[in-house]
Length: 133
Image (cartoon, rainbow, N blue to C red):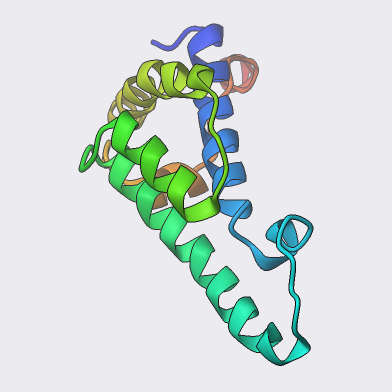
Protein backbone atom coordinates (compact mmCIF):
# COMPACT_ATOMS: atom_id res chain seq x y z
CA UNK A 1 0.00 0.00 0.00
CA UNK A 2 1.25 3.47 -0.89
CA UNK A 3 1.97 6.05 1.76
CA UNK A 4 0.79 9.62 1.37
CA UNK A 5 4.41 10.62 0.78
CA UNK A 6 4.74 8.09 -2.05
CA UNK A 7 1.50 9.25 -3.65
CA UNK A 8 2.71 12.85 -3.49
CA UNK A 9 6.00 11.85 -5.12
CA UNK A 10 4.19 9.94 -7.85
CA UNK A 11 1.89 12.88 -8.52
CA UNK A 12 4.84 15.28 -8.55
CA UNK A 13 6.69 12.97 -10.93
CA UNK A 14 3.87 13.11 -13.44
CA UNK A 15 3.61 16.90 -13.10
CA UNK A 16 7.33 17.39 -13.64
CA UNK A 17 7.50 15.08 -16.65
CA UNK A 18 4.47 16.73 -18.25
CA UNK A 19 6.01 20.14 -17.55
CA UNK A 20 9.22 19.08 -19.31
CA UNK A 21 7.20 17.99 -22.35
CA UNK A 22 5.31 21.29 -22.28
CA UNK A 23 8.63 23.16 -22.47
CA UNK A 24 8.94 21.85 -26.01
CA UNK A 25 5.76 23.61 -27.13
CA UNK A 26 6.30 26.61 -29.44
CA UNK A 27 4.66 29.12 -27.09
CA UNK A 28 6.91 27.97 -24.22
CA UNK A 29 10.15 28.33 -26.17
CA UNK A 30 9.23 31.45 -28.09
CA UNK A 31 10.27 33.67 -25.20
CA UNK A 32 13.76 32.15 -25.18
CA UNK A 33 14.13 31.74 -28.95
CA UNK A 34 14.96 34.70 -31.14
CA UNK A 35 13.31 34.64 -34.55
CA UNK A 36 15.40 37.01 -36.63
CA UNK A 37 13.70 36.65 -39.97
CA UNK A 38 9.97 36.47 -40.65
CA UNK A 39 10.69 34.25 -43.65
CA UNK A 40 12.04 31.58 -41.30
CA UNK A 41 9.03 31.74 -39.01
CA UNK A 42 7.30 28.68 -40.49
CA UNK A 43 10.48 26.61 -40.33
CA UNK A 44 11.10 27.61 -36.72
CA UNK A 45 7.53 26.82 -35.73
CA UNK A 46 7.69 23.39 -37.33
CA UNK A 47 10.94 22.51 -35.57
CA UNK A 48 9.57 23.79 -32.25
CA UNK A 49 6.55 21.51 -32.56
CA UNK A 50 8.93 18.62 -33.18
CA UNK A 51 10.65 19.39 -29.86
CA UNK A 52 7.54 18.36 -27.94
CA UNK A 53 7.44 14.99 -29.68
CA UNK A 54 11.16 14.51 -29.09
CA UNK A 55 10.93 15.36 -25.40
CA UNK A 56 7.93 13.08 -24.95
CA UNK A 57 9.84 10.26 -26.62
CA UNK A 58 12.65 10.82 -24.10
CA UNK A 59 10.11 10.68 -21.27
CA UNK A 60 8.65 7.47 -22.71
CA UNK A 61 12.11 5.88 -22.91
CA UNK A 62 12.89 6.92 -19.35
CA UNK A 63 9.59 5.67 -18.01
CA UNK A 64 9.79 2.27 -19.70
CA UNK A 65 13.42 1.82 -18.58
CA UNK A 66 14.83 2.02 -22.12
CA UNK A 67 17.31 4.66 -20.99
CA UNK A 68 18.94 5.76 -17.78
CA UNK A 69 18.13 8.93 -15.88
CA UNK A 70 21.51 10.32 -16.90
CA UNK A 71 20.85 9.68 -20.60
CA UNK A 72 17.37 11.18 -20.26
CA UNK A 73 18.75 14.34 -18.64
CA UNK A 74 21.43 14.72 -21.33
CA UNK A 75 18.93 14.20 -24.16
CA UNK A 76 16.37 16.66 -22.76
CA UNK A 77 19.04 19.28 -22.09
CA UNK A 78 20.28 18.89 -25.67
CA UNK A 79 16.79 19.00 -27.21
CA UNK A 80 15.49 21.96 -25.21
CA UNK A 81 18.84 23.73 -24.79
CA UNK A 82 18.23 24.05 -21.04
CA UNK A 83 20.07 23.04 -17.90
CA UNK A 84 18.35 20.53 -15.63
CA UNK A 85 19.20 20.66 -11.94
CA UNK A 86 20.80 17.62 -10.35
CA UNK A 87 17.98 17.55 -7.80
CA UNK A 88 15.61 16.51 -10.61
CA UNK A 89 17.93 13.63 -11.46
CA UNK A 90 17.83 12.39 -7.87
CA UNK A 91 14.07 12.84 -7.75
CA UNK A 92 13.55 10.83 -10.96
CA UNK A 93 15.77 8.04 -9.64
CA UNK A 94 13.60 7.77 -6.53
CA UNK A 95 10.16 8.43 -7.99
CA UNK A 96 10.08 6.34 -11.17
CA UNK A 97 10.28 2.98 -9.34
CA UNK A 98 7.44 4.18 -7.08
CA UNK A 99 5.34 5.02 -10.14
CA UNK A 100 6.06 1.58 -11.64
CA UNK A 101 5.06 -0.05 -8.36
CA UNK A 102 1.87 2.04 -8.17
CA UNK A 103 0.84 1.04 -11.71
CA UNK A 104 1.55 -2.62 -11.05
CA UNK A 105 -0.40 -2.63 -7.78
CA UNK A 106 -3.38 -1.11 -9.59
CA UNK A 107 -3.11 -3.71 -12.37
CA UNK A 108 -1.79 -1.43 -15.10
CA UNK A 109 1.23 -1.98 -17.31
CA UNK A 110 3.96 -0.69 -14.98
CA UNK A 111 6.16 0.58 -17.81
CA UNK A 112 3.50 2.45 -19.80
CA UNK A 113 4.03 6.20 -19.97
CA UNK A 114 0.73 6.54 -21.86
CA UNK A 115 -1.14 4.93 -18.97
CA UNK A 116 0.75 6.86 -16.30
CA UNK A 117 0.12 10.25 -17.85
CA UNK A 118 -3.63 9.67 -18.20
CA UNK A 119 -4.81 7.62 -15.21
CA UNK A 120 -6.43 9.18 -12.20
CA UNK A 121 -4.06 8.78 -9.31
CA UNK A 122 -5.87 7.51 -6.26
CA UNK A 123 -5.03 9.74 -3.33
CA UNK A 124 -5.21 8.52 0.24
CA UNK A 125 -8.16 10.87 0.80
CA UNK A 126 -10.16 9.40 -2.08
CA UNK A 127 -9.24 5.90 -0.93
CA UNK A 128 -10.75 6.74 2.45
CA UNK A 129 -13.95 7.93 0.84
CA UNK A 130 -14.17 4.77 -1.21
CA UNK A 131 -13.77 2.77 1.97
CA UNK A 132 -16.56 4.60 3.78
CA UNK A 133 -19.17 4.37 1.02
